[in-house]
Length: 286
Image (cartoon, rainbow, N blue to C red; front, side, top):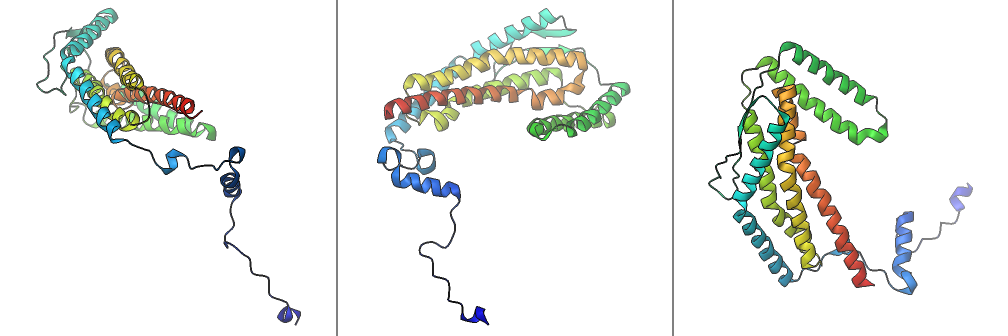
């Protein structure tokens, strides 16, 4: 009966839970810090100092940039139309188009050129070939290694979109509600809307940081430049793809290779601009 007479284990002092290795390391840094200085919590974890003057000035900057863009709306719309029509002429696609635009009634509406391409609904053989391609893509993606899992998800999402388009044109080939003109006009309108939103998105994600006025203007200016150059080139390419592969390619182009391409560039420029802000913070803290 030795277990009945065994002395009780001594009570531990301090917290009863066990810290992980990471917690132990952070606790040691918190006590000693670098060069015996106390380590403070990072601003992304604790909070951000937001002077009211900076908020007011940043809001006024976003408003001024928006008014400037609205004042340039007709010039931007005409420049897009002229460049898009030039590319269509160079590619020699079958159809009719004109660079003449009618500006929208509201500031957030962008006029677009009229584009009519000679395309028809996909035939049964085209639908069968696309269905087989979608099935093969789905099978091939399943054999990719785990390291390619993010790309696999993206490819399977594209396969789902194309498969849904094949299913739709197989059952209701005459009910597709969108024309090439609608596709290009809506795409240009989305790029214009993104240009209008850029100063306000940057207001909440960039202007409020301790950055210079030149950096605030630069991030929005670069984003505008990206969208200004991208829009006509991107939708001229869309017109070429639709003329080559038919309207069956339109849903995939719209969902994955339309405004999504513009957003990817938007985010990339923002990430680059945040590196400017970090470098300035490091210099000020040195």
